[in-house]
Image 1 (cartoon, rainbow, N blue to C red):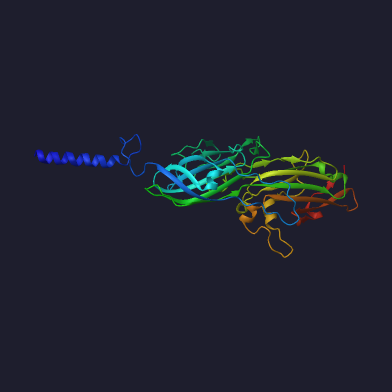
Image 2 (spheres, rainbow, N blue to C red):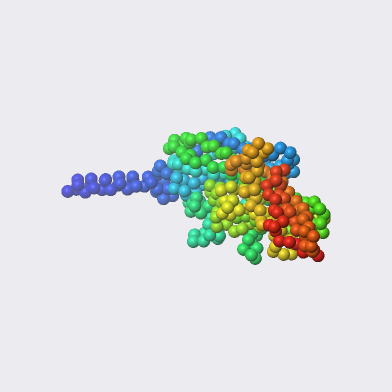
Length: 367
C-alpha cells in the first residue's frame, strides 16, 4: 500500500516538472523551456533601394535621401508581434543583427526613413472594431492584421488629412519571410530588398497664349489619395482617410506659368482604379476643376517610348522612379462669340498623354 502511494507521488512530481518546462521566465521557477528567448545572431543580406531611373531628357531636381532611421518588427508564425528593435545601416551593411528570440519561424519587417528616428511617420495598432482609430503597438498584443505604419498628418474638417510636413522624409520598406531560428541559436539568412515608398510630382501650368481668363495664377493645384496608411506587408490600408497633399514648393505665379512640387507616398498601380491618386487643377476660390481630376498612376503607366514600349511596365519600375514632370498646357480656342474655350494638353516626362478637346470642358466666361 505504502509502496503504491510512493510511486503515485513520484509520478505526480515528474509530471509537474515536465509541465513547468513550458513556462516563460518568472512563471516556472527558472526551468528553461523550448520557447524561451535565446541569443540570436541573424545573418543579413541587404539590398538598398535602387537609384532612381530618370527617363531620357528629364533632369532631376530632387535626389532621394539616404536611408537612416531603421526599425525592425518581428512577427511569429501566428502573426503576433514579438519583437521591436532599432537597427542601424552599419548592421545591414556588415550583415549581422543581434537579437533574442525563441526557436521558431518568423517574419522580419523593416521600416526606415531619411531621418535618424523616422520622425515624419509613426507605427500604430488598429483599435479593435474600428477602421480609423489607433492605439500604441505592443509586443505580444499587436498582430500583422492590425499593425499600421502611417504618415504624420492632421485632420481636416472635411474628413481628409494633410501631411504635418509637406516635404516629409523619404520612407523605405523591406520584408523577409520564413526566417527560421533553431534551438541552437542558428538562423536562416535574412534578405532585405528595400524599396522606396515616396515620390515627387513636379507640376507646371503653362498658359501658352497668355489669355486673360486662363492665366496660370488663377488656379489652385493639389493632389489627393488614400495612400497615407500602410499595413505590415506594405499594402495600403483601404480604410485610410483621404490624404490631401499640398505643395512642398511653389514658384512665384505669373500670367503664363505656375510651378508646384509635391512629395507623395507610394504610387500603387494595383489601387489606381479603386483609390486613385488624383491631381486637381481648380479655379481659385471655387470647387470647380478645370478638367476632370487626373489619375496620376494611370497616366504614368500609359507612357511609351518612341518604339511603343511601356516606360513603366510594372510596379517595380514605378517604385524605382522618383520624380515625375507633369506639364499642363492651356491653348485658347475662340469660337468667335463672347466665350473662350480651352484645349488642355497634359505631358508627363516629355510624353503627351492626353489632350482635352474643346467640347470636353466647360466654357470660361470672359471677365
